[in-house]
Every structure is written in C-alpha cells, then in structure tokens.
Image 1: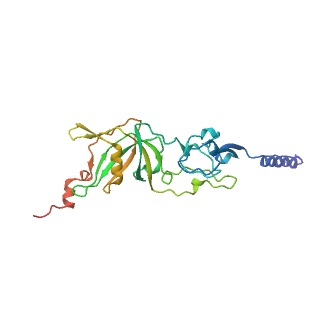
Image 2 (image 1 turned 90 degrees about the horizontal axis):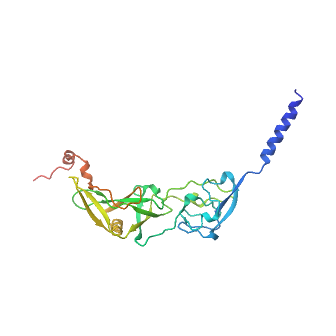
Image 3 (image 1 turned 30 degrees about the vertical axis):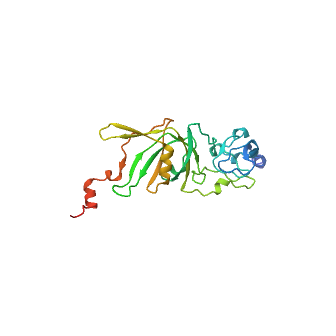
Length: 262
C-alpha cells in the first residue's frame, strides 16, 4: 500500500499543475474605443469588442456594440473602459409640448443623486418670507420627467477591478459632489396646483411650470425639493401647504417669542 503513495501524490500534483496552467476563461465585452464624455451619444465607431478575464467582466457589461449605439453616456468613460448598461441612458428627447429646464439641487433636495433619466418627480416649493411668518412649504407640480443628472452629482456606480491591461476606469477616479443639476422635461401647457382647505374642500389653480421652476431657482428666499412620483400622470398632491410654526404649539411660541410690552 505504501508503495502506491508516491504514485498517488505524483498524480495529484500533476492534475493540480494542469488546473493551474489551464488558461483563465474570458469574455468578450464592449469597451470604449475613445474617451467618451458624460452626455455623449454613442456612435458605432465609439465602441469595440475586447476580450477580458471572466472575473473582471461586470454582470451588466454589454456584449454587442449595437446595444450601446444610440444611447447616452451618463458617466464619462476613458478609452478601454468597459461599457455597462448601468451607465447608459436614452438620449435627451423632448416632445413638441415639452421644454427642458435645469434645476439646482443638493443631496437633500435631489435625493442624493439617485435620480435616473426617465424617472418621474414632483416639486415641493419652499418659500422664506422676509417678514412675518417663517418657511412655507407647498407641493407644487408633479409628473416631471428626469432627462439628465449632472455626472459630478450622480450617485456612484460600482466599478469592477482595473483591467488586466493596467487601465483604471475613469469613473473610479472622479470625486462626487454634494450639489449638482437635474434637467427636467416640463410640459408647456398650464399645470394644476391643488390646495386642500381646512374644511376639506379643494381649490385648483394653474401655473406655468417653466416659470415656476425658473423663479424658484433664481429667488434668494426660495428653494425646491424633488421627490419621486409613481406613474406618468401629471398633477399635484392636494395639500394645504404648511408654515413651520404650525408644527409648534402656541404655548411654546408664546414662551419663546413673548408679545412686545405696550
């Protein structure tokens, strides 16, 4: 029995050596044929196929260049970077009754950069009167379509390890900023703003959303917050609007801000 042990060990070593010498499995994926900036619409000559180790190919890597052609790069790619489905979006297209407008947002007001083209959002307008009562918030318009999120603000997309060629994905080097711009498709027709009274009755007014968003962007005493809205219906949540003081009991306000003496 003992005389067979060296033979068995030799066989095991031989099989392990074969396994180690076996070429690593590879996969053909679509890569950038040149530097592609964010917002670029991919042309046939912008992409090519390259064989990479299977373990370095992202799960959503494109395998056919035709899958990328016509789509827009949401995050810049350097030459040789793998083209992933998660960094692509549809071109910024507008209908005849739509216009595009950009709004400034922060992590808090822009959902931390998690917005993606095609999503529907609503707008809460926040106004800070110079005199009188404090901040007033009101749901304004809803159903606006996201067209674009500035790359420096967009939430980071996980990157695969560096390619075997030594290249480092461009997106892995960028620094995300807590502020950015979101471009929205806004209908040109008037949109409803609904007010819900204390008696439960609803009042409706109309507003040009382009003018509303432009005014909120430019006003020194106003801001806006975006929220995700389901579906494609355009409207607004019936709301009464809220002064911040309404959340504080009157007794607390009296103690904090005593009435002036006469």
